[in-house]
Length: 601
Image (cartoon, rainbow, N blue to C red; front, side, top):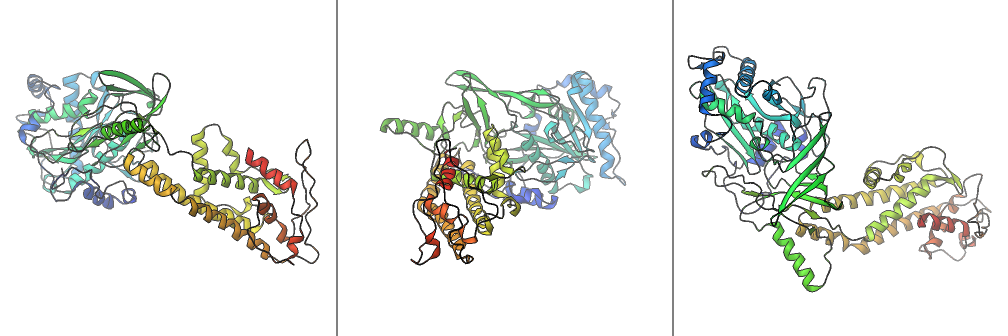
């Protein structure tokens, strides 16, 4: 499938899960071609294989009866425009009429209402990418579908209405016969990739190239793509009808879906589902409360790892992972089983490795044609595992301290005086931990408005927060690599080990940021006689700490440095003995008590 040879290793060539996938159409085609191919041509399956498809969808007698009755086929020819002065757009309406007539006459109008051929060449179908995109594409003809695995698009563009890649069974591209070529597979590949992205339980996608004379079938799955020979659309009318019936099948398994995943709908959108897993002869059904996987790949060829968050019969949260692998690779569940056995044998607890509850192997195969031997051959290597994330570590502590520090700086405009205007950190008190995480991640990755830091704190504290923000931004990136590899135990463990081994460097870097800030603050010259501008602190009473109020900002050198150094229990910035700053009180009960209270919360 697009590859000269298929080895036993998981493919790691250039792929369409890149920024390039969000750019111009020509660039997307190039990236997609590099993902699928290391040679110019894709493999062509046999004529016999194509004739063996969809035998259960329609009988020969039904096809003969249809051809005798339809007004679109007479004297051995379909009603298609002649080649002279033919434009591609001239083919759309005739083929839409033919496809709908085939399905309606053979299935009946009522049954076929769930599959309708639509002229979509002028419809902008919105793409979904790993990063935000404005990209779209327009297949010439699509089979619009309803059913368990389909849903109306989440974002409906004005010209697209309720049509999107999320409710397409298959797509066809029209071409003038003399214009067919390599670009066809690239264009169909873009459509098929988006169908995979929008329909995460899709195992394969098939599409047609249609000309005024010929047709050709394309098949896309996790090992790449293959195509059929060209067939004369008039001479092979029986085969053409059979393919249209198969590509618009009412059976989602025939269309290429994993039907162990089923969905319920509300207003055309999935909202609740189930996934069925068979392990050691026992069948279990798990609940899916979110129609979107917690992880998925944005590629056609490769492992296509998809992870679902689910609930078992005892209301325990589990993660269900579907992935494809080469047939001669050791299945992942064997590694996890061995890791579990060794841990039990040695009496140790596994950390950073998933706890596998069950697995189901060989859910499907990509090998459909004996001649196409260089293909991935099995899927579903592991299903159903609880995730054991890395244990609480120093990075979690540092991150928590950062948020406490930000909370204090943003909230207080001066000691004891709170800001009355809304703050972005107000949303950090939400009950849903996922929402809070997203808010904090957004805070770390976005520029800080200087207006959030009151003049009392000074530019040095603002600079400190920005420096800490940069530090945690990098940590977030590295943790994201953990998440990307969390279902690859070996890689995940290696990434966790690398990051956690840098504990001393992390602490030294953060402490150095504070030390540098303190030094910058203490460089500021104090006005004469202002060395002891801080009011004498009153010890905390039984009713709580006494607020210290100031009508204006302290002398520049007296802002917060002593509170920080005393709270840490040591002065890390050396001072000369005659330094007037040393004349300040070293015991500041109120600020330290306030910091401690905030930290306890």
